[in-house]
Structure formats: C-alpha cells, structure tokens
Length: 323
Image (cartoon, rainbow, N blue to C red; front, side):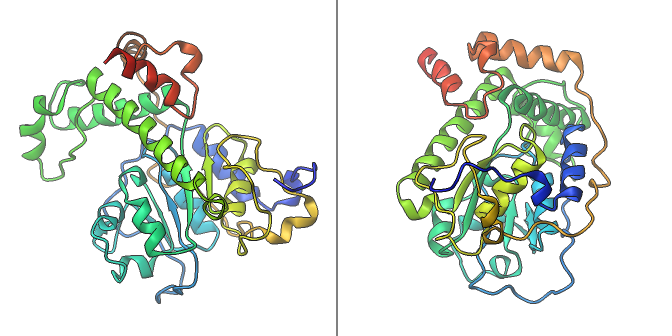
C-alpha cells in the first residue's frame, strides 16, 4: 500500500468509548442469542440515501457480530443485526429484490453474513463495503458448540447431538431454533464450511483492484481496539481512491495509514457506548472445551498450533484429506 511507515497512533483516533466497549466484550464470551426485535436506530427514520454506501458483515455468527453492530451504531450507521423490518437480511439477499424496504432503511448489516448472497449484494448496491469478521478457530468453535448446547438443553435434549436427536422437541417449542446440531460431525462440517466461505469471499474481492478497496478482514476478539476501529474507518472511508491498497487486507498489521491522512478515514465514534444489557459474562464448562478439543484433535486432526488461526483453510485441508 502506498503510504508512509508511520502507523496511526491510538491518540490520533477518538475511540475511547469504542475501546472500552470492545474490551468489555472481549472479557465476555459473546454468546448472545439476538432477540427477534428491531434494533435501536438513530433519531432520523427516513430512508437512507441510495448514494450512501452500505456495509455488509459477511462472516459467521459467534464472531463479534454484536460488537460490530454496536460500533456501526456509534459511527452513525443504521445497523441491522440479523432481523430487521420483519425479515432476516441474509435470507432477504437471496430474494434478490433491491427495492425491498430493508435495503433502504438500513445501511449496515451483520450476523449470519456467511449465509448472505454477497455477490448479489455487491452487484445490486455498487460501492458497498464488505467486512469479513472472523475469530480464532478454537474459541469460535467452542462458542458455537455452547450456543447449540444451550439450545438443546432448553428443549430438554441431551447437551450434544445431531439435528435428528432433538428436532421433534425443538419444533414443538414456540421459540425453537433450527441450530441444534453440535455433534462432532456437525462441528467439523461447520469448520469446513467456514473455511470454504472465507476462501471464496477473499478470492472474489481479490479478483479486481476496485473490489480490494472495499474489503477487509477483522478479528475483533484478537485485535487491539484501535486496530479494529482503524480497519472499519478505512473500509468505510468516503472516497475509495484515497488510501488505496494493492493487496487484499486479510491479516493483522497490514493496514498502515499516515497521520496526515486521518481526514480521509470515516469519522471515529463520538457517542457513548455500552455493552448490550443481555451480554452477561458466560464461562465455558470444562466439559464443553474437552469435547471441542477432542473433535479438533481426533476428527478434524488439527494440531494445536492451528487452533488460534483466524483463517481456517489450513485446518480444513487436513479434514478434507481425511475424507
């Protein structure tokens, strides 16, 4: 990237509130099952300008989607966290209806973004920005496992199992979730699917120089707060021709911005932030961690040296070779 070697110093970025919020979320396990209700919006309720670029978070759940939702709101965005205007945004993307009110009431979208049709979104809304959220592999799998474990226990099922072992009870519950498979095979499949999605998304945005300017990988849990905010402010900058990159930004430390170029970034958050009221700290039972670690060792065959990877292709390759 054609910038000088001076990295943005935290003191140059007004992210005190965002820093506090990110640190609090890191101290908790983000295992929030988002309630099916409208998120809080800024005071202005009219439709957004069609010329205003949207930002889509296209990684999986259990990877700081609630934190990103909060950050977008703090940056003045109308953020849709999964369910908005009577529908889930990832499902709506497959309907391919660009005139749907959903796309004109909100301009930031996240949670279950790995299920969205990001190619259609890119075509339907030119100039949109894309964030591939990720998280260290073992913590992500553990958070996913325990989310499903709680779903299953809520329905009176055994803590671990496949969908068929809990389907009848779950569907008999008025607030049932379809996410009830945390079997070893289910975990392995989720990992393989996430790895394939990461590779596909990165290849798509790396195929053209213009797309590279609108894409970045972010690891909220693993990066410093100022690194997270720099990445978001860069990808959401008003003018893409400023601070261009020649390579796809997929790793921590790739993004450098000269101090004199701060005005080219999106404005930093300026509102007070607080952790979601329902984001109570959750510890992971030792037994849950043992189950996930066993699956990684025995079924996936990933060495512990890969467990903190935030891009999962290397680990998934070992699984694919077994199959």
